[in-house]
Length: 81
Image (cartoon, rainbow, N blue to C red; front, side):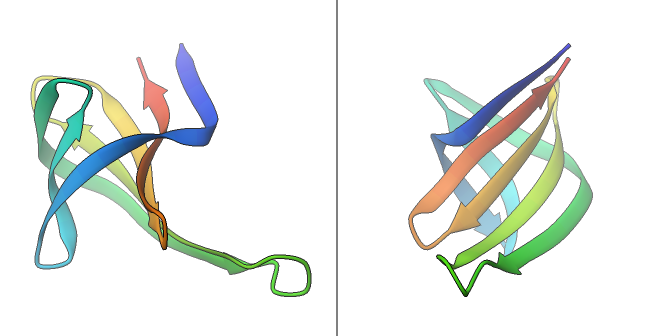
């Protein structure tokens, strides 16, 4: 089952070379085992701008997640079971 948070949950992301290396979600710290996907969204300039960088991450000993970063920080968008 997949959980989706449309507005995202705030998380802390530690970067290494511009890519996520660890995330902190709640009270748990997760190391990134693998980056399975990476894409950018830059759209909506005619209404309101959306500029986000998305990563599909496999977390070490944990789930697969989709996170995104924008001007407001990092958020957890989706959790894959």
